[in-house]
Image (cartoon, rainbow, N blue to C red; front, side, top):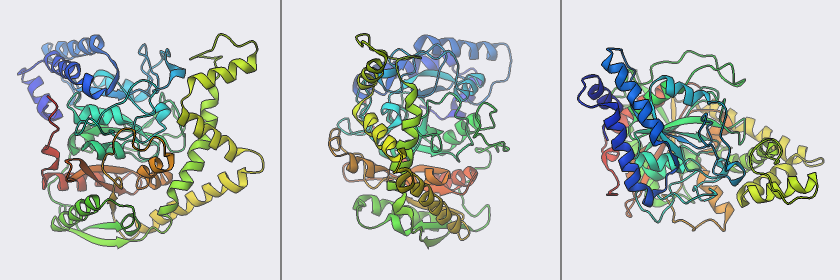
Length: 486
């Protein structure tokens, strides 16, 4: 599939219609879904209607934006009015939102064509999309392997060419890690840059919606469409949104000397040798492009994982208390009193991983343990943030591997939760500090599986991340390799 700009040019020149582009995407989805299982719901009729509306505007001589007529997929934890939103959970199996999330409304206003809702780990809790209550999504590069998680469906859909771009959410790495596993670009924005109104909450101080794309420019265009202040979200930042895709250059020297910091704590024991080799080579490429390379220490980086697994489950235990069988969602019918109805509904509706995290969080917040666990975790979170602040006094951008390994086989880690949690070792500290992080493909291992380079920016410096990622992308050919699925 062509890039957003190429498709836009084809549309305004009337070389192709939005309906033709949409039908092509829907035909590819129909052909690939028996293999990939990226989508929980395909909205074919609605997509054709949206495409027809774009074609009508073009026929009437009206101007259209870059995203008009572009096929896009949405992670199934963003509310879509009149379309089922399940969060990959049985407890929301029949939930049809009566309102639209801010990000999906913005995309509709921009004329984007939503082709469906993508599979995900239940309530975004997981690193492989295996905790979904409905289906297993496959990695387009190897159908026996996972696409990463929790936004595995969105990453796989883009990598497989079922849509051009997609939206995911990132609480501890859930955009960047699947982007790395699937060989696409994925960005977790600065906390508060993109509205969370209509995003079903997992951990409210960490969740952030972000874009996937096959190229840096497409990802930048999509971020520009969804970013911005929203009075419906109390954590939304009221800042000016630049044109992220406007000044992308294939040279790092255009903005003066760029200082790149390599986080020393992310190398060594536990890192796959193939990943270390590819990331080291990528850093050399950045140096050749004009970057100044510095080795930077973030001493508390290693404490991100235990800190996250106290804070995130604590917030989840509070956020998921609303699913009680009373207001909406699943309700068991054979309970003989209110308490039994609560317990039976939650037992039937939630999966193993969600139950595990609710119990962890409830324990950490309980009387006698709050100070020992939750309060201490918040203090460590502040120290991690301070490490990043200190690093950004010395450098402009930080780099490290996105994930310690390439995609693992389905079922390989399901019986070992701790091993699964380690998949997000490199990405979690970025969420704890509220910083932007971007994955860009930087190589393949000897099994032909993608490897990702993570770029970390200072607050609201997404423009700088795109600048570095674009220069790297244009000097390499990794983004041009596509999985052979048909």
